[in-house]
Image (cartoon, rainbow, N blue to C red):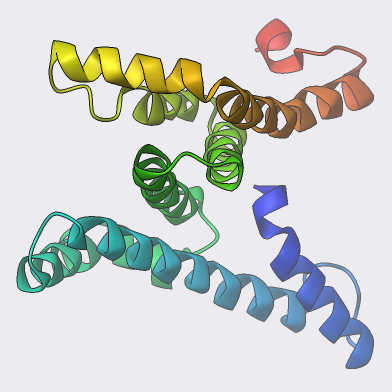
Length: 194
C-alpha cells in the first residue's frame, strides 16, 4: 500500500513543511491528504467501472448498478470511513485493469500493456493473491474455439507488447522482494517465516 499512498503522503508532507506542522506522518496535513486522496481513488474506481459498463449496457442500467455497488456493498463504508483500507484501491486497480484489457484487445499497444502490468503488479503488492487477476487480460474474449485461436495468435503477434506488460508487472512486484531482502536478508521473508 505504501506505493499507492506515496503521492498523497508526499502532498501531506509538502503541506506540513509549508504550514509548519510536525513532519511526523501523523499530523493533520498527512491525515487530510491521505483521506481525500483515498476518497479520490475510490471515486476513480467507480468512474472506471462506469466507463467499462457503458461499453455493454445502457446508461440507466449502469447508474443502477453503480448505486447498488456504492450503497449495497461495503464500498461506501470503506470509501468514507476507512478510505485508507486496500479494498477500494483494489477495486480501482481492477476497474483500471479491465478498462486497459478492453482497450488492449481493441488495439494492442505498449502503453496499454504497461498499464495492464502496473495494475496487476500493484494489486499483487497489495494482496499477493490478487496476482490471479493476470488471467483477465489473458483470457479476455475466449468465447469459442475460434476466438481462443485468434486471441492466442494476437498474443504471439504482439509478443513484445505482451512482454512489456509482463516485465512491468514483475518490476513492480520485485519492489517487495527487494524490500524483504534489504530488511531481513532473505528474498522471500514471509514465505519462509510465516
